[in-house]
Image (cartoon, rainbow, N blue to C red; front, side):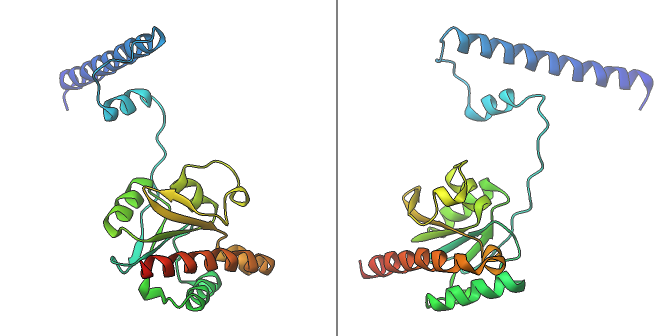
Amino acid sequence: MSAEGQNNSDAIKTGVVRVINDFSDYLSHQKEIGNACLDISKESETIINHWGHIRQPQEPFFFQGLETASVFIIDSDAGFFKGESGALLIKILAAMNLSSDAVFICNAGDTEAMARKIKNVSPKVIITLGIKAGQSLLNIKQPLETFRGKFHEYHGIKVMPTFHPSLLVKHPAYKRQVWEDMKQVMTLSEVADGA
């Protein structure tokens, strides 16, 4: 690129940044004076509010399983049925009369992709495994111990947050709590199947 072309490109970038910063200042001022009637899309507002902030790259989104599954599992990791924790998850599912082929599972890496998949699959119940999965789906900041073991709702779908199988491998004492959580899921599934 020629020096003149580079100068023009730099001038355009500088101009765009100035306009966006000015507009952001204007919106902030309008908010401060209580004017909430600005006609701006949510997407535009998000872009403006995050302007200049370093954006964290999204984790890749992985999923597998039956797209018509009634049980949807969100895993804090992406290994799913691999290793010791994966083998334990398969055992937990077998005790629930489910196989790894009968559920849909994804990681908690990309919340937007996760939300789209939940909408497409439309399961009867969602199980979140581990703190990251539970916090990201339910938009909760507290430790997992404070919200696991009881049903929550996500767009009308029951959600059961529980401990991740990798924790159970390291601390088998948590297995009983996870099993109590899964018994609630089985009871809900039987009620839903019988309805």
